[in-house]
Image 1 (cartoon, rainbow, N blue to C red):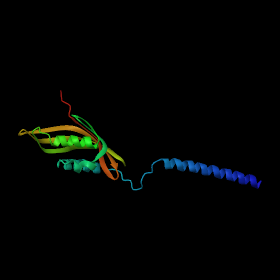
Image 2 (cartoon, rainbow, N blue to C red):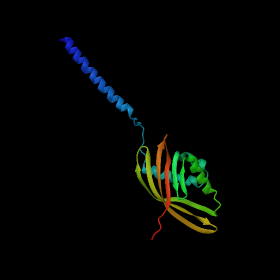
Image 3 (cartoon, rainbow, N blue to C red):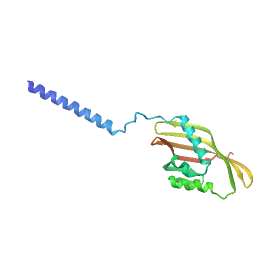
Image 4 (cartoon, rainbow, N blue to C red):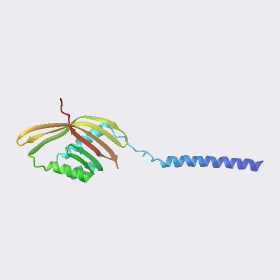
Length: 169
C-alpha cells in the first residue's frame, strides 16, 4: 500500500515536473522582453526626424551613418536605394549635383506619427525643399514615410519613401 502511494506520488511529481519543464522551455524559447525596455514615444520620433534633417544640412553622410540602418531601403522618384552604402551614394550625388541648385532649406512639416512600440515607429510627413536654381527661387513639396527601428538603444531609419504630390486635375 505504501509502495503504491509512493509510486503514485512519484508519478504525479514527475508529471508536474515534466509539465513545468515544458512550460519553461516554451517561455525560454520566446525572446524575453528586457525589464528596462522603453517604449518609443511620438515625441522622440519627431525629435529624431527633425534632428536627421538638421544633420543632413551639413551634407556629410558620416554624420548620418548611425541614423540609417545597414539594410535600409530608401525609395525616391529616381529609384530605390538598398543598403547604407547605396543610400550614402544617393545622398552624396544629390549634394554634389551640378544642376545649378543652391539648396537653402530642406525640412519636414505636417509630421504624423502613425505607430510606436518598443522596437519601431512609423511616421508620415510633408517634405519641403526651398532654394535657388540658376538664380531663381524654387519651392518643392512632396510626401514622405519613414519607418524607424530601435537597435542597440538608438533609432535608425530602416525605410523611407518620398514622392511628389499627385498632380491635381
